[in-house]
Length: 78
Image (cartoon, rainbow, N blue to C red; front, side):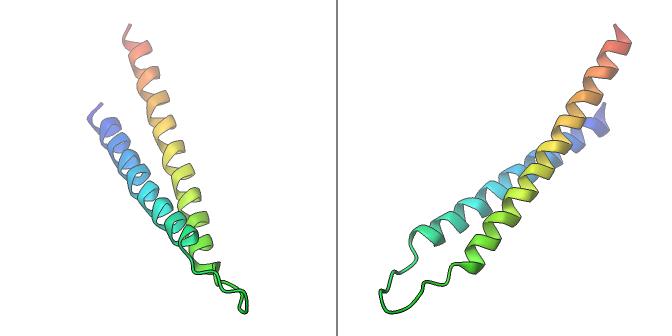
């Protein structure tokens, strides 16, 4: 059980960390200067947002699997 809760804590940490990354990227996109004469360079923050999204999905998947394993263990003990 201790290992499962450790995995869940790591997954939750990944979710928190990547939510902050996603928020920072979104803020950078939202506050980018707009100049009519030049295109706005949003490549880096948009790539960062996509990376954070994928990492969030991965962390959520790990958390879901840990929850399923814990449920299976509890069912086996009942």
